Amino acid sequence: MKRDLGDLALFGGHASFIQQIHVGRPNGIDRARLFDRLSWALDNQWLTNNGPLAREFEERVADLAGVRNCVAICNATSALQLLVHAAELTGEVIMPSLTFAATAHAVRWLGMEPVFCDIDPGTGCLDPEKVAAAITPRTSAIFGVHLWGRPCDVDALEKVAADTSVRLFFDAAHAIGCTSQGRPVGGFGEAEVFSFHATKVVNAFEGGAVVTDNDDLAHHIRSLANFGFGLKSANDAGGTNAKMSEASAAMGLTSLDAFDDVVRQNRSNYEQYRAELSGLPGVSVIDFDHEELNNYQYVIIEVDEEITGLPRDLLLALLRAENVVAQRYFSPPCHRMEPYRSRQDAHLPHTEELSARVLALPTGSTISREDIRRVCNIVRLAASRGSELTARWEQSRSGDQGLVSSG
Ligand code: T4K
Image (cartoon, rainbow, N blue to C red):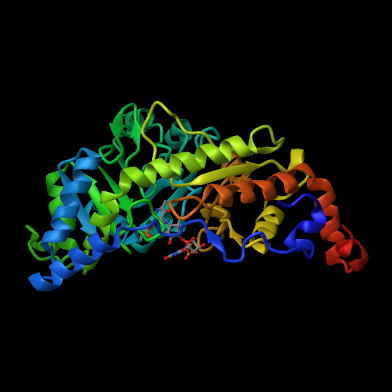
């Protein structure tokens, strides 16, 4: 355990971890089950194109989400694009800026303008009042994002959508297995999109899905993902290839088998982080509504530089020097990134404030209690002596080696 600033790798100490630990390390998988499924697919000589494993995966995801239709797609970005295309959206789509670039890129790829709207600082998700104010005659849809698995204020967004005749969809990339007021994420708005990327709580190597109770929309998306075959209207002709392969479905199914265990482990990690960092001024671990189901796949801390004297990015750099590959999910926010920054002048104070404070820490089934203890030890040491650390870092960068090597 590190006791003094000189113990930190940033100042010449040994790194806390010999090997890197990551946010987004794939969770452990039952290899025997995975290999059985892969072997079965090889024996079956059916490797993609709506195969039996993909269909089973779709059934299980639809069940979890409490909806009639799940269309498995090769990744969530493509799923978002297909959804935007099938829904025939036009003009402007309102969304948060505090999200992964894929949410905005998917909309822009289809020729629409993402319009970034500020968040509720308490949840990190769209502020429904700000959404209502952002609607213009060009707005065709609202895309909520259940950030870090915390659901949006779904009721309020549904009301805004109904009052303004604007369509409502959700990017639920982070939120499989979560509920809002006891209802599973997946059934909100007209459709929702899950991600099954390797870094996610359900992992299909790469994968995504559109879930919806709208049978026509599901049929349309399924056809578009398969070159447009089977589309009812000649106007809709054309499509792409965005199907989920049997190998991905085999992985997705095996990951779903472990879902409850992984969520239990994530929750225990999350609670340990909360306990180890409790009472540390200027650092908080974001909360979840424990009355609801949560997948706890992200452990996010907020670092208040005014209280700690420690800039979030310096904490990131010092964690990385210790081989803790923390992530700035999500910073910069989309409206501060190209191609959006130069296209619009969004004023999003809550987004900017939260985005500047957040850091994701490693969790999942590959992290041990001892790993978390050590990560928290570093965060505690750094945040409790933030001003001193920052001054020392600045001096070391300006070449005062004497201070760098002292204990
Ligand atoms: N909407 C939202 C709200 C999203 O967050 C995402 C994706 C999407 C849509 C789009 O979903 P997909 O089209 O990807 O299905 C990662 C993931 O690639 C991305 O899926 C995810 N969100 C995002 C939050 O995280 P990066 O740019 O941070 O990836 P990368 O390569 O830097 O990896 C992150 C960490 O994970 C690293 O520390 C390394 C570690 N890692 C990664 C992989 C792939 C591993 O340890 N093993 C691995 O196999 O985006």
